[in-house]
Image (cartoon, rainbow, N blue to C red; front, side, top):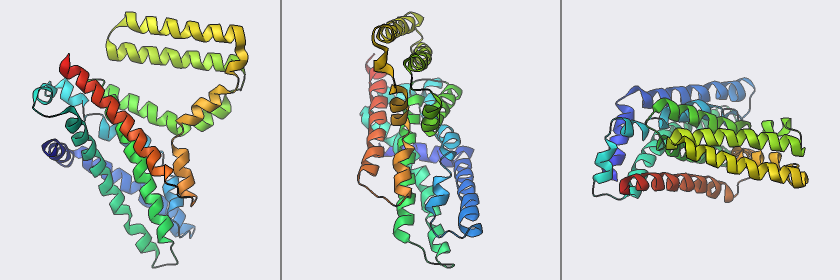
Length: 287
């Protein structure tokens, strides 16, 4: 695992990806710290950090798109699959390399509370709690991007799909408020989502028959529920989309409410998607 970790970390810093990630990340943080803390006089860095959540939409695909897809495109994944090393070590080596890259950026912004303390009173506990929470969010998003990258050999497709997934999690609450809580609206929304899922399955599995079958079964069940008892669908869209808004937990942390469920929640998401990546690689190894 250590060899894979070093290889991936070296690859980031021997190419533009790692440096561009750190440059853009620190630039965004610097701009918002200047606007909120220097211009407006806030001593709490959490206000600035809560406003840069959108940065993950752009930077997570940049970091994760090549981590597995490039291995599959160049067929170098065959060396990993046949190497005498467990699949878990492969997954963790690659994942921890991305986490380390992000951690370097997080350690860099730990300087800001110290700088702000020279101009006023700073609550260091809350400030570093906000930075830690942002790091936990990045751990969850990196695991999602790792899983998506393991599904394809196209870096562009991996980047686009990661971008879409992260974007949905950021906008989930706003989208939910725009959709009427009626059964018809829920039926249309779920139908569109099922079409997208079926297209994704077709793109990943390269099997149109399976994708069409999955779509037909899912759409049939959804239509039967809507026609027989549409009230079961009322208001469910807001609940489902609300559960996708994983930034809500971080919002509570920035508000000064630290609960153990915050790191547990984000680490659980990271574990689930690392496990899905493990299963995907393991299936390829033994197929």
